[in-house]
Image 1 (cartoon, rainbow, N blue to C red):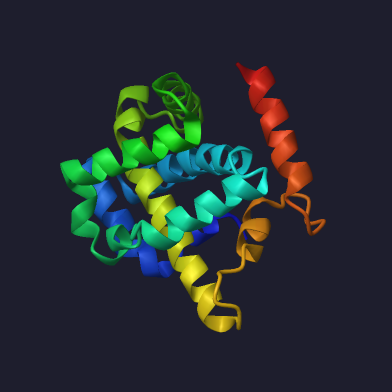
Image 2: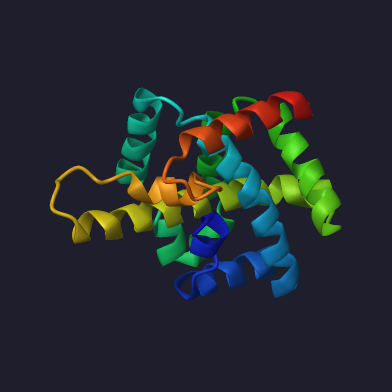
Length: 181
């Protein structure tokens, strides 16, 4: 399972349709854009959750951020407040706007959509990613005995080589990102 699998779950179809309508895109273009942007967000999240403190902060943000509201009520996705929340998320994930611009340019090459459109879409996708991960975490915490949510679902998302550990994959992502600039 990866982040796009979670985003494209049938329970999020209304949110995807809302994004398509908001940005005047076909469903296929919307899914391509979301998929491309989500991959970069996933790499950024992986790089930012390498140590236990960062992982704990991330899990806390998922728990307290109430990002699932964007998926539960897709009409919120077009609001200014949602874009601001998304930009705040991007600041935490990427650190600066230059990385977000680079992500939009890369996604533009992958999708054929304009980078300016993808820059506008990026904060919306960031809220959707956080909302999807938050819902997934809540679902996992309901099915497990501990009161603190298990981060095992993050391993599923970030463990690209299926060896049971996301650390080698996250380090590989960080290494590639450092040399891709």
